[in-house]
Length: 417
Image (cartoon, rainbow, N blue to C red; front, side, top):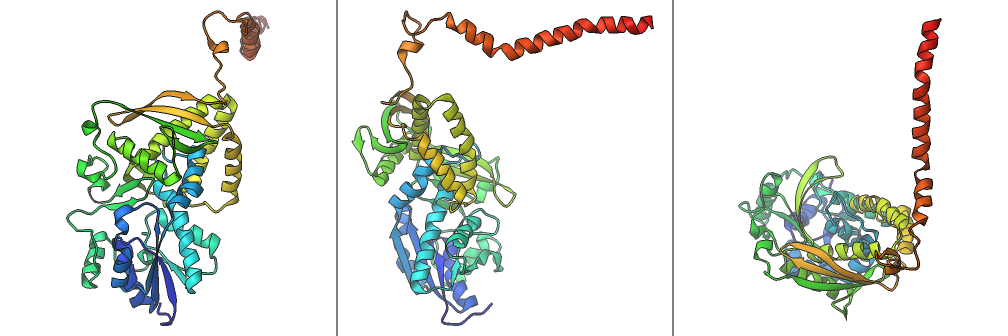
């Protein structure tokens, strides 16, 4: 396993427990210099002091770059426009972030002349697949090192012991161990007592959302504007992608919107339990869906609904860099051409409900649906439509009746013989 002392490994670095101990482990076991690559996709204060921490752990250098806007425009918005939801609830916050992080890691690896790529994903999780499918797509010639599949560390407790032994500063403790992933779209919580699906999360677990019981006692209205399926304004104020989502996170979090407790199916075949907070994203999904209901015809909506779970599976499984995604994006782009307008949501105690929607492309026409007097719809026309629409059922019923009427005569003929 030893390698030349001159080789360089680019490590996807978060500053968490796993990647922190991987730096000295790679140096010790591969004789390599380690270049850490950290992507700012909205982790906030988690990035404070990250460079110093990486260097203190033994890294040669650490690259930290703000990729929040790219994350939203190139990965989150397409997934939102597709309506992709995994496992009936999950809005794919972690899944969407991995391809952009891995892409930047590959770019830095090529810049510094690295010969290998490393990540801190466990051998039980989904992220190892997401990272390595990106590596395979963008740097198939590079060696991949996954320490969790090689070393003797088998638990987070073991990892903490390793960190202490190698003087690596980490925030995790044995008394309160949660595995968290945070970005501008969401925060996920796994591990510790959450591994018991019967355990109810305590309120101090949550980071982005207020307990709905403690949310304001009066509802708040928020209006989200979309242009061709992409969110562009909140309450009439045009905002860039980052500012828009931060605003909605603040509003949704204040009212306790966006919490889900999910037992999901991992790619490797096991079920896991996670708690997710996606306040702004939940508002965007709700508003986007309502606007589509207003401007898309029934068959196009059905097509979108058929594509959505397939798109969700693709994102969840890390198959971002595929012709399949490009093809689905092309289809979604056509459906979103007229998804322009405003949706007004009412937020109250952990819920959001639609309060109104408008669009210049609305297919809703009051002249056709009113129960009052109108000159554009002849109620008598419905009779012919129903007769044609029900023709297969009428034919089936008549044939069944004819078959039934012939049965007694057949019985009689047999008896006579």
